[in-house]
Length: 80
Ligand code: SF4
Ligand code: SF4
Image (cartoon, rainbow, N blue to C red):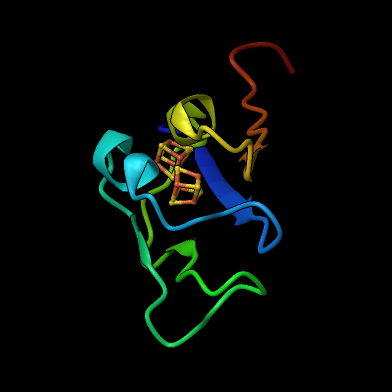
């Protein structure tokens, strides 16, 4: 089962450069066109299901604006 993740993008640091959008293998990030950051940029956000929590977006973000969360799924493999 693929892991499930989500991200939070800081309005303080995101400058809408789109690097995370290009880097996301799941193609789940876009710029939020109806929102502006305090500095006047359209911030990145997740717009659909499919984030795996791989953290590639956070690694490529030059402004460290992304925090990644990943759901831990516990599966019982054997035993009673
Ligand atoms: S890479 Fe960082 S600064 Fe650029 S759009 Fe994504 S979150 Fe914003
Ligand atoms: S954690 Fe991975 S899958 Fe999720 S938004 Fe970032 S790059 Fe895409």
